[in-house]
Image 1: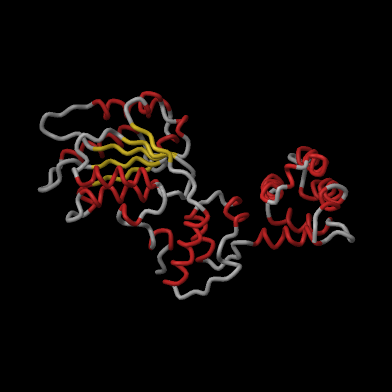
Image 2 (image 1 turned 90 degrees about the vertical axis):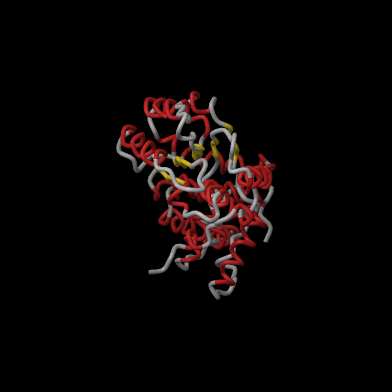
Length: 305
């Protein structure tokens, strides 16, 4: 069975993590000291930016000679049935002692999807003090920090894991393509626009390239939109709207306009942006009949070949 590239090329050690330099250096030092005294952590940020990889790498680097199964417990809030089940799993894991392991890790993913009541129950775990069993290092992972209950945020140190730079992402993609003996082409190395559209989600980028998708398909569509002036763009809008929801397509077009500096010229783009706000609740066919003339009569007239 073919492995997902996002798993196959997941960094195992902190030294293999790209970006997040300050956080990586801090955790490398903590790992050398067996994470003694390190408070609970919250790693937050967009999907596909390395939060889970960093948590697992910290556990492995802290106890490199020990199987991660013995030193770390990974829980996904969306998979767990109840907070009681979660607490029992954590208690059972923490109470089991293994030679050489001073402090275990409990990695809690998608914590913001839990109800406030369930998150409040986690507070008791953070405050629990056992003279015999060392308190584990809790690492909470989430996309949105404000959705984590204040009682957890106040007991943890939060680090933002932002988008990786375009250079880091493209270098990572080209390295994987080389390892997989695939040729780097204009269809599988993401452009700046593609990185904006996919929000720098490296996991999603790997998935699309592995399955043979043209990762820059919207670049091609937008080039058609730019070049088709005299005959109008109605058919191009219909094609785009047949493949993606209205809101997503409009977002992609606005991102492209921003990258090319056109949003700085309100007199050019205002009629089109007004049209975008009018089509949010329309069908694809209705949206096309609004967007095409708005584009043709405003932005299209000012685009250079």
